[in-house]
Length: 264
Image (cartoon, rainbow, N blue to C red; front, top):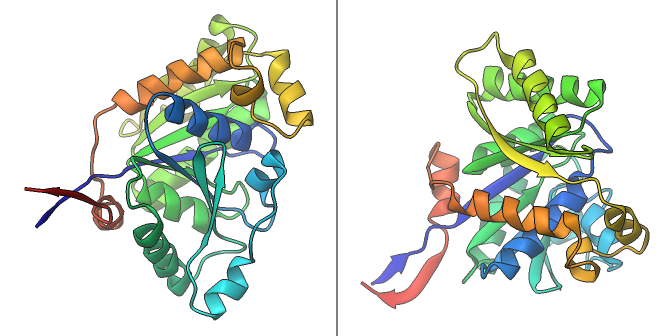
């Protein structure tokens, strides 16, 4: 009988639009691919199609039409990774089951499922964060970004019992500024002692990032030697080395979906 292969699931979330979440998710997926992992990147905001826009590719079909016909989600290969598009609105129970079925059908030899969560629909954020083993909260040095990140963390804890979060700082000028952002976010969530924040790192402010975004390319692809690329590689190493854990029934379901071909 084939062995179960445990699928590492990581959700990238932020409380505020415009902190570079999709750019981070795409390049983190590419970094993990460069580190030898087979990665599937899920875009949970099909309405905006952020990942497809960044890569200048068009989706094969719209999720709502595919679901009506009983088809699986769109699977788009880009730059050595697979992109799975999902979630044009708050997800119904049927759509959630459809997503699980799509993962079952599309992730035969995938090592990592990386989820770029929407910043607009709390139900979708909660669903994907609950499904993931690891939650990365992305924030920047702006006061509103920190406040919104803290609000999201508190909601995920109070309503959905999420307690452990990795914090990744974007757009900081240096490590000292990034650590200050982490300290400020920690103070915002300090009243709840059950919440655990782990400093994942700082994605350095790098002109290569903006140039790559304007070119609708990943900076890992066209500026592999840049500070940002070196930084995202280190972040990828850290998150891949984190201990696998199962938080609940939904994550357990996803974690058990993929089977390896080797016998016991």
